[in-house]
Length: 258
Image 1 (tube, rainbow, N blue to C red):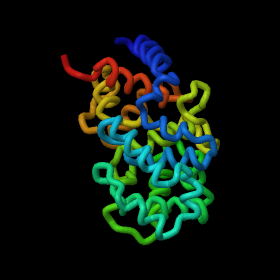
Image 2 (image 1 turned 60 degrees about the vertical axis):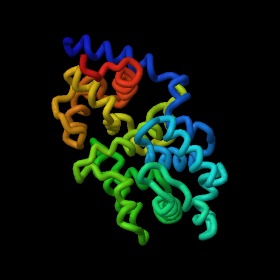
Image 3 (image 1 turned 180 degrees about the vertical axis):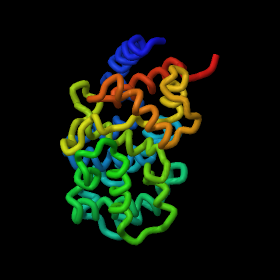
């Protein structure tokens, strides 16, 4: 497929899949339950953190997270007591457990009280070409409190080779325009040109089949390669193609070999 034809194909698929109906079985439906900025970004960050595995399982666990926080995440983060944290001890989603959940709540409180909130924490350099250093900086802030080493694995660091799929997905949610009622467009310090496509098995396999990605591993080097291709198609909003690549992979089995 020629580059011009491929761009047209991906533009068409991105438009087709960026619909409100996309929310029904997607983790982004959890933050869509809220209207306050802080509730949206906290619930979005927590749900994105556990977004691996079966999507129905992610939704179930995400809803359980919100229930344990009284469906009032910002208030819970700012005002929780040690007794409140104990109620989180029963939570488990794959390798993310109550110990991790409790620390995340404490760390989020620290971010809001001492670092002006998630948006500021993720935008140390708001003019960076990519989000890699900003994500790494956020991780440093997030783990300033005493914590168990095991919890660090739940926040990826692209400077250490990770594609940081879940964080890049969260950033897409927060930054991209809400005009199609999917993403939120809440954060203004970061722009869409800086964002990277959330690289998972579906987007990776589809990108390889389309010739957008040659690297076999889905790591940071692969993400840089994919970003370069997608930014050549749309330098202003390259991550819109996440909808095309993900949709083709999940709903059309496009990434599977014949």
